Image 1 (cartoon, chains in turn red, purple):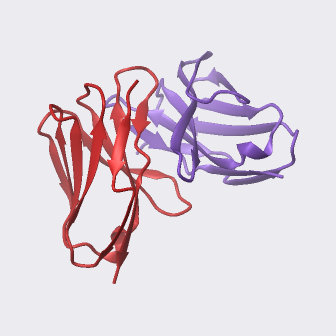
Image 2: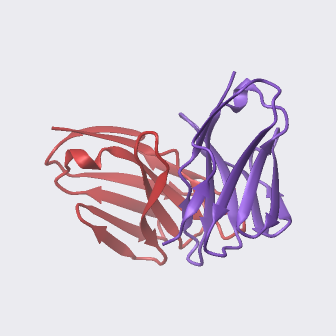
Length: 111
Length: 111
């Protein structure tokens, strides 16, 4: 059974700081996805990582995938308040049952 | 752009009532999914469908059923709503890269 673990689950940080969210998964996969969720809203796709070594960047967010280590990271550079949200990673286990999600990282960025 | 539309954003129902949650996607995708999201538990897969009239149980199907009579429409049915089914329900459609696109969500309260 595929398991996906994110850490930390809760993160409070100050604007201007850098930080990394980690996503570990338990079985072989080379497809990993990052989503953002704002309070009361649905999930919005951020990054799609489809191979070992894949790196994607959008603004202050950068995601990478190491399939050998079964690890993805979401790096935040010089955080700003607008990035406050819950971030989920999700892994494709290869079956028809879609993605397996981590529990999410609740990120608060304080001015 | 992929559009996934959920018919009701907010519903309040009484225990024992039958509840229909409808989801429509406009991109001719074969795979559709229903998740529920609860604080501290993340997203849990209820049912999914990979074709018209085809359905498969996810991780927590008890108390739910689904219907897929047309490719674009995937409905979640609570035959007799209970208070422990109070939750946020998220419908998603899947594209070729494996990425899921989510609807806006339906927040159900069962009294």
